[in-house]
Length: 478
Ligand code: UDP
Image 1 (spheres, rainbow, N blue to C red):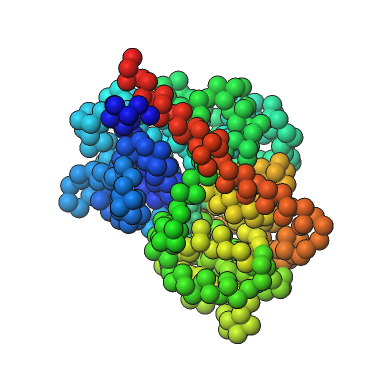
Image 2 (cartoon, rainbow, N blue to C red):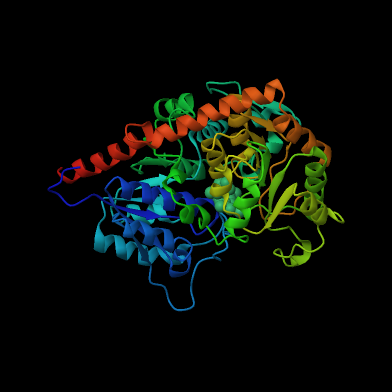
């Protein structure tokens, strides 16, 4: 960076909660570590969940700050419990954001597409806009080609597999695995927004790295014509225990308890099971998981998040949903640890005792598992998670499918349950130590090494972040 000019000023406008806010905060921290002046735009309430890690960065002299938009007294957007979905309306933030942009004129703003009004609002004040949609390139390519060719429309049954046309690999999906809105006409505008390819955006910010999905990064850039900066895995900016333990929300179990439990276990012997921040499983599904885990006979840490309760019952309440005596049995045998609520996921995944991850294939969890060099059991449920599963199992070959076939919105009532036998079989296949498992483990480890190299000085993600800063700097001279 030219030392005579003031640093490039970048704004970051994360979505309010869910798996979109966490990576955007990390992206801002990455750019600050590259010397850009980074400002995170949020609301007073939402800033609380990441204030401490930003304070720590400031103490280390990183040029990063939070700007809380001024809102009238009793107005704020969504809860702070990570339960916001793409449908959460945030338009109350439009006017204060535009006022701020006019006043400060940053060199660019990275905005989350879930603020559905934000592209037009930012364009109207003439600030270069970089799109963030939370997905990797593979999922973006799948979505784009489904939208262009609509192979699912020729299928006669929801479970009949079709090939996603035009991709570097043979990728099969079924209509049952597509978002319900993905099978409806006239969603092209929404997809273009999601991809940042509406012709007006400066480019797309991606939490991924080149070596992870090389053919799909090339396809996304060269065939689909997107400008993309890949700067991940951005979770790597959480270097100390506090950052890892306090990421997203306050954890429900103190990290020392978890770490000392893990310390008592053998290397790569423990399975970590989590479904992210949004998904609500039905009580019947929780029961099947419990039986499946117990029958598999491998040690586990299981994060039980919110439970779907029909009739508006309290979703936080986890009374009486586990099999009789289950908790006592696993406590006595020290075979399992149950976390009810929020877990310090990064801290857990990086512990050497962890040997596998049952994941809902949210992109952040997927990347975090890969970065820790872990093989995965894939259990997609919503969003672009079925695409992520294909990347994990069919392209990278570092995972085993549990057999989830039906897409559903995180808000709707879960209909189909994955049975205990499927859970047990997938866990045994991954953790059982056969030749197939050893191969997956070897490939996953190699990928974890590549992830680390990508963000080190000279790595592909490191270079992409620098290249964007330089480009923004040179635009000033025009
Ligand atoms: N997460 C966490 N503890 C939890 C649950 C989730 O730290 O108990 C974090 C996880 O590390 C990831 C994010 O929340 O960074 C979830 O994002 P993902 O894309 O995996 O799934 P989503 O929540 O969007 O479905």
